[in-house]
Image (tube, rainbow, N blue to C red; front, side):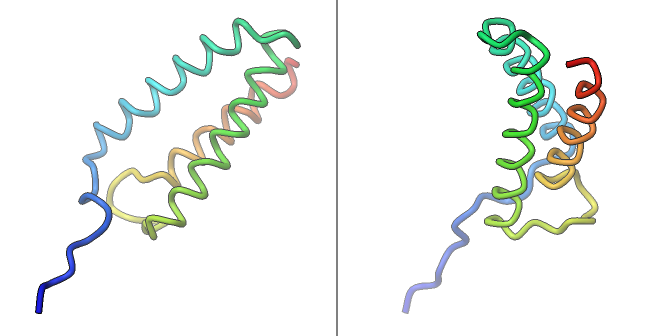
Length: 90
């Protein structure tokens, strides 16, 4: 019998996840700059979509919500807080 291997790669280090968050924020800012509804509304919508995406990804990967490393759940929380901060300026 062959042994089943995990479908997902092992956990990333926190610094790699922080780089992913910053890189995604730069991309979201770049895309929001070209939005037809203005920067604020487009950026808020993209942050909300990113938070939902990270929640779904964290659930599918079965990551620990309060784990020892930064996960997609933490990334979703960061995007939700950023959207909460940006929201009043829209």
